[in-house]
Amino acid sequence: MLSHKKMESLLLFIAVAEHLSFTKAAAELGVSKAYLSEQVRRLELEFNCPLLIRSTRSVRLTEQGRKALSQGLEIRASLLSLERNLGDQQDTISGPIRITAPRMFCQHYLMPLCCEFRTQYPLISFSIDSSETSYNLNQNELDLAFRATINPPETLIATRLFDYDHCFVASPEYLERCGVPKSAADLKQHQCISNLQQSSWPMLSGHVEFKPWMMVNDNAQLKMLTLDGQGVLRIARYFVGNELQQGRLQEVLNHEVLPGPSVYMLQPQLIYPSAKIKVFTGFVKEFFASKIEENRILN
Image (cartoon, rainbow, N blue to C red; front, side):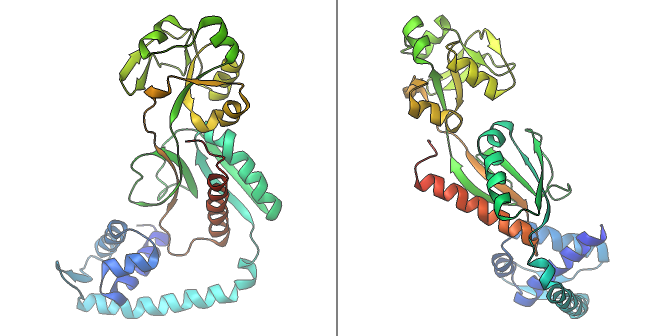
């Protein structure tokens, strides 16, 4: 185990040992019981001895556990003393924030959000991986991930930001020229555009196959084509919300729309997250809460 991981596991063990309860320690630290249990188990493997005696109703310290708690409390006190001595530096929100997020979410929300945040904290910089690549945030150097999912991972702190669905849209010019599809089967008679390797769309009545005349792995390009009257598109509603409100796009087949996922902000379960991450994650929560309150996220 890496030294910094061992330190984190030790601090997590101290919390369990003080409460003699995984449930209470997890609630205090804001982490999951599963993550807490796994970190303590890894620490026991690292020390090659049991630290806790677990039963269905209680948690007790072994002799080795009592020694680990005693010395661990001294280490924690030294860390807290160091933190207080560096308090003036902590008040300055600065440095890089490393994020991964899907390209569409980056374009529509993350870029303006980061720019707005930086007007308040100009010493912050951002490094953003715009992709769908799945990273292990507990092992990678990334600070945060934004992902659309129904089941967020239990090993991370997951904050639900908003829910959304995928709607079917076309421009008024296209619909006037080619007619309005009334049923899923009608799509076979329409020009459809889609992402790469996508020849069917999930609908309430089932998957409907079609033959797209254009496939592009860029949602911004797909939206531009749709606005230009080039066909029917299935896309995340939040990405075309402004165009729908302005009447530049119209929704079709709304009776076929399926319930969608939620967008989550994911972060490692750290005991002491950095000041910049605490401030930024708080800013993100307020950013989306205000948009939901203003009804500016269509779902």
